[in-house]
Image (cartoon, rainbow, N blue to C red):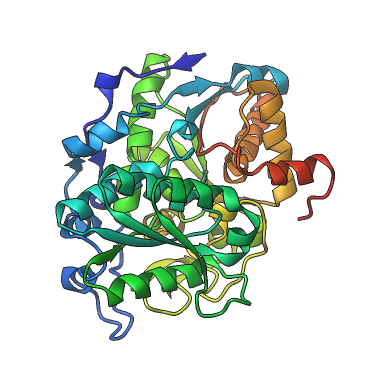
Length: 415
Ligand SMILES: *Cc1c(COP(=O)(O)O)cnc(C)c1O
């Protein structure tokens, strides 16, 4: 059962969580002075359009027409009721997933890449730099930059650059340049924190360039709320008054924020973050100020963190290997509005394979985390007999992660 929203019913404004948080958020601090930063501090890296959104108190923010035109290439995305999974589990729960894998890059990430490229182009910036782990964000930004005729340079974590060439090939096809990071040390396997340092340093040194981040920041989560806004309409079409629980994988928190934040004020709705046990930021990290990168060049953000030097194990869910989490998500977890759970990767692949066999779709390893938690919620309903409505975010497909499935299928996957 698939619930499609007509193209002309696509939301035309994003949902801003900032004025609706249960507690005020602590401000980002300048890395040199430890004082709250202002718009001028961010201007070398970001366009004013995005800086304004980063601190906006408006309840909603209109999506520019040029952005809507591009999003309509694949949006609205389908909401699907996973009836075959329900049957296989024997659960009385109703399981829905929002399919963000249908975008050009194959994940939710273009939802923010497109507006980020748009606001930069509008303010006359012709070159963007960014980092990417396994390559999801790099492909999304490369696609978006091609739409607005902007040059794009992607610093890719060297271990992935060497072992996963297909996303680099996608980036180059969209016209971007992709180089391994860290640039300064060819013997290092690299990390997301190091690649952010490379990309920020590049943009800060050049007048013609800005930097772009694919998760964590307030404006990124804002752009992703189109997911939850559409899902709300689609659940209503399906005859559901509200979901009982919303589940998403959490790396930096953008696909989670995107699907969950529009339901923030509905106290009936539980919100659940799912992270890998090997990079369990929300469930084992500390809530404090920390840098977003390893070199300590970014502002200090109030967030759950494992420390900027934390080196996560090389699990297949590359998009979940980040030492920190979005300040919005961190605040919601800290004040008890959002829950978090962590799984070892073998458990998430078990769930992803079960899902593929009944529903047909082969998920990204990151998405496997959300599927795992959704299945466990549904199995809990089987015990209690509760007919809960479970909504999870199908954040991306796994067509470029087949080596990981191969390892799992042939018992070579280790936790
Ligand atoms: C990047 C990515 C994630 C994790 O990033 P968030 O910012 O936490 O959403 C999850 N799923 C997929 C498919 C991704 O590409």
